[in-house]
Length: 616
Image (cartoon, rainbow, N blue to C red; front, side, top):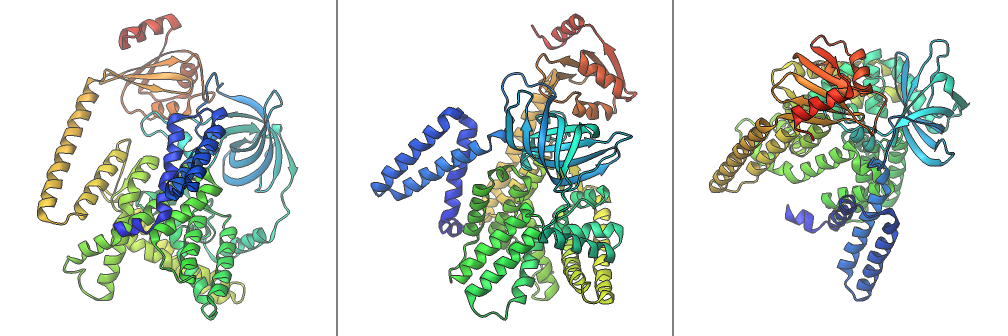
C-alpha cells in the first residue's frame, strides 16, 4: 500500500494544494494581501529552485496555488459581514443553464449571468438557484438556453442548524450557486427563445425521443438518467428507494456507466493497431459522449481518469492508480475549483481510493469463507463484487451521512444484485437506442429486456428499504458512520491476534468514554439554542417550552422555512413564546395542534429569556 503512495508524486502535489487551500480558509488572508502573499511565496520558490532545492520549490508553488484556489472559491463561503437583509431586490440578465423541476405554480432553474444591484453595480458570472412563481393569468415556463431579464429578489443560502434540516449552504456551494432568488411571471422578459440548437442538443433530443418511444413513462426516466445523465423524469419515490438502499449512484452517469461505455468504445476500435491513433480516436469519442451528457461532473471525472490511465498504457508506462486519480483531481480543481465543495466530487474520488486501497484486503478476508473460497464463477463473482462494494462503502459512507444524514446498512447486499442487473440494463438500452435508428422491432425486443431488468431493480430497492434496520436517518448518522468505518478499517488491517485484541480493547474503551462524555454533556444542557436567519430559537432541555427571539440583524429569507418544517412536524406538546415578525408569520402558517403559540410584548419576552436562560 505504501508503494502506491511513494510512486505517486501527483498525490503529494494535491496534499500540499489542499494544505494551502485550508490555510487560507482558516487564516482568512485579507483580499488586498492575497496577491502580495502569493507573489512572495512564488519568489521564494524561484530562489530555492535557483539554489537547486527543487522539491521544496515545487511544494511551495503548490501551497501558493492552494491559497489562490481558496481565494477563487471565496464567494461560496457565504461569510458576509455587516447587515445583510433577508431579501435583496435587484435585476438579473442571463441564460437558463438547467431546468430542475416544475411543481404546481412554481418551477425551478439554475441561471447564470449578470446580477445588477439597485445602485447599478454589476456582479458578473453569478449563478442563481431561481424559483419562477406563476401567476394565475400569466403562466410561463423557461427552456434551457433562454436568455431572460428579470426583476428579482435574492438572498444568501441558509445554513442548517435544526435537527434533520436541509443544509442549503452546503448544497448550493456543492453546485456552485451564489444566491437563491425568485420572481413572479409579470417581472420577467424572455429576450431570446433559445430554440437554436447545436449538433449536440439535436443528438441529445433525438436519443431522448427514441427512449420515450421504446420505454414506459416510469422506466424512460431511469434510462435517460443512465444514458444521458438526465434525472429530471425519475419519480421522487424511486429516487428515495435507490438512495435509502445505497444504490443511488446507479441512477447517475457515474464511473460505473462511463466504464461500460468506454469498454464498448474501446472494443469498437480494437481493429486499429496504431496505439496513438487508437488513443486519439477513443478520446475524441469518449469526450463527445461526455459533452452529450452535458459535461456532467461525474462523467468528466470518470472520462478524465480513463483517459489518463490509457495515456499511460499508450506511452508504455505502468499506471499507478493513486497517481491517476490525483492527476484527474488536480486538473478538475484547476479548471473548476468549486468542485472541491461538490459532494459528488468527494464521493467519487473517495470510492475509487477505497477500492484501490482496500479491495485486496476484503478479497482475502472473504476468501476465508468456505463457500466463497471455491474457484468457480459465482463464488468468485460474489467475492469480488462484495469486496469492491465494501471497499468503496467504508470510505464513502461518512460523506453520505454528512450530506444526506443517511446510513444504508443494506447497501453491500443491494449493490451485489442491483449493479449487475443495471449494468445489463444499460448495455441492452444502448443497443436498443442504436438499433432504433435501423430496425424498430429488434430495438423494441432489446428495450423490453432492459425494461424488465430495470423494473426488477426497482422492486428490489423498494423491498430493501422495507427490511427492518436496512437504513438509518438522523443527526447522529455522521458520527455513527465515522465510528463504524474506523472500526472496520482497524480490524481489516490487523496482522495478528495480539494486534487485533489491542485494537478491540482500544476501540471499545474509546466508544464507552465518548458515549459517557456526550451523555453527561447533553444532560448538563439546560437548553438548546439554534441560530436562525431571522431569530434565535431556544428549546428548554427535557421541557415543553420554546422561545423565538427576533434578531436585530437578519440574514436570511422573508420567513424561516426550516423552522416552519421543524415545528410543523413536532409530535410532542410545545408552548412557543414569541415576539416579533418571525413568530407572527410562523404562528399564522403552522397548523400543528401540538403547538400552543403565546405572543408576548418585547419587554415581556426579554424578561422571560433572562429568567429561563440567565441572560443579562
